[in-house]
Length: 542
Image (cartoon, rainbow, N blue to C red; front, side, top):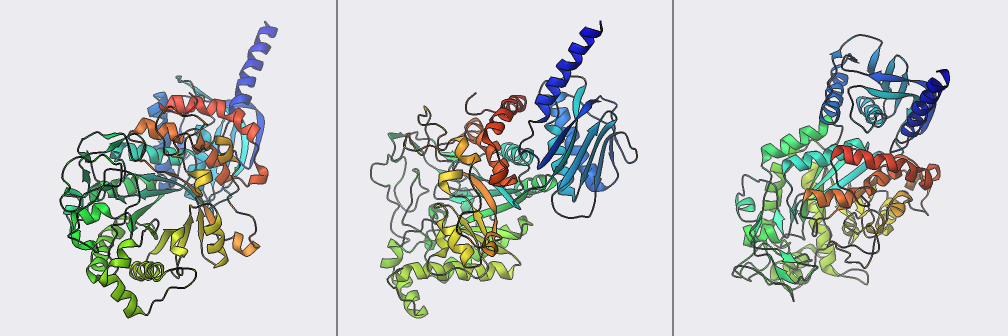
């Protein structure tokens, strides 16, 4: 009989050991101890402060959703799951589990929340009336302060419920920024009460190309959607409870077709009808300005020579900024063709009036974009916020307080850091999750079997590029992955493109490259895939 009990104990211990090393992102320090703790329906969550009680509610929500359990929350006690938050500062935490319970102590409320995310990953992946937690000792903190994910809702619109689920995925991976790409050539997605046609017109297109650009046809279906300001507030509050900051993006001066379709005066040439690009199959009217139906970069951008353009954008931002407590707003600044500005009398007059001249590096129109961005930055600064922009905002001179998001490789981030600006690294060759995950992909992707981004490359990404001084390295705030949705039209495809690369990204942002081990990560991913299944999430390699 003793032999049988010994075998059972060894079996349980081996399962616990396999489970406990599967935390992603991997903690900075984790020690396995003997013993375990069993969570039952009567196990209390001890939470004295309001912040800890709120975290307890979220943990209970997770248990209810995936295990059918709900635990009592009490304000005093030493046994059960004990939450405590200190004022030490930062996002670190400790987690101690043993035979009598679990104790999580955060250096801040965010740290306590991240401790709960580690506890979630100590739970078994099978449902049961009781849940066994291995005995461990964890001390942990992130390497990078900015750990983000972007979702493009301009090309394809996603309902509020899925945006919340996307935020849940960010939280489960201990990431803390949600970059919400809200305006595009193919759709304007946020209600602006002063300009109702942005959503009655700009949020809808008359069709969408099928196949890879320029497409092999058009689905001929009216498509669109937008978020009301009430829904935006709801999503922002939902994220805040999970210690996630939502940064909105309102694109300018390019990617403006949906806004121009709504208010043609914003164009340099209001009377020129929208022209489909060569080879694009179009559906519906071609009179006047239209929301674009294909994925590309378009020359019809906001006119930089009209004061009404700046008035419009200031009005829009005056409604957008109060919806988002974040100290930042993303204003795009990428992929703005200058063709219309070159032939626009008003833009040329603005160039003359400002005394702008081209040089061997940039045309006068490039410097006009710098004026555009810097002018909008002054307005945004006057509202108590700072701007983030794609690395094209470096061209022609960087706005004084701007943070640069480096997407065209790492060069822009290096240059911005050398100019003493804060940087978020998001290079397309490492963290564009719309790229396919293997050399051949049987569903549509933007790379169309020409290029791919495997999980190993994401995992081994060094967030801090080489060649920077110690002071410049400090300006690399963190990194993020971008999910552009030209070829991602539904939530299941979003998940398929996210996972498992998002898990790899979370560890790359949490731990310095020197302390990561891809082989060990691969082993831990086997259990992580079972968590995806528990969540009901799709993933690559299923």
